[in-house]
Image (tube, rainbow, N blue to C red):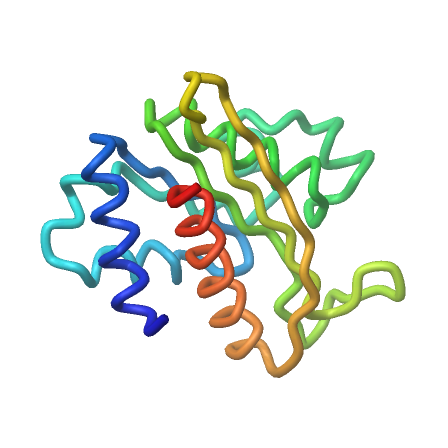
Length: 164
């Protein structure tokens, strides 16, 4: 699905549920928020975005426990999960999405190479229970390509979860 069509479809799904979306981005630095707000009228369903690039920002803005970051690393599924939940909670939104990763060209390790990106999605299911999903992906390419792929993947999975 073309990216703008994907954003339009996400907008329609959120509007149909009367839901608001909040994002927490680290390695993508606001790229997903920018893609969402390219759509006119996005203020009807997009509540806010947090660019929490530093560990301190993740803790101060989203309430991610510093101990969680210290024990798992900022690029981890537990931190991505906490970021998504924090964005959802702090914004008072129905849906929270997070992205944290290593876009490179530096910062990679053998355990977490450049291109490692962790995602989190936090939303309510049909029973009103908070559904939390997280996933780690490895993207290839330069910094720009990794960031673009991560942004598109976050939106593709958000669409899939909203459609379920």
